[in-house]
Image (cartoon, rainbow, N blue to C red; front, top):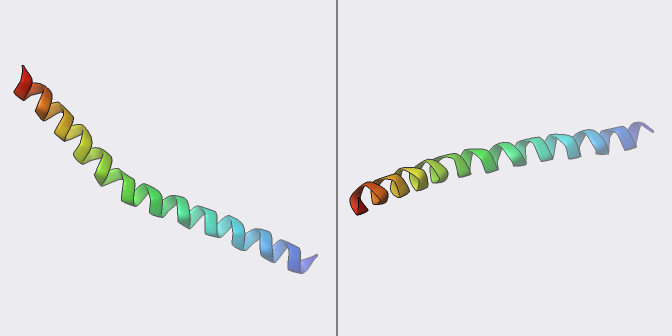
Length: 45
């Protein structure tokens, strides 16, 4: 049982850090994209 809970904990921890990394990577990209799209909309108008 100890082994199983150890595995589930590390999987949870892995998923949490994986999601955090994805967020850290995606946030600036999304910010740049939204800035770019609003700029291009302004340029078009």
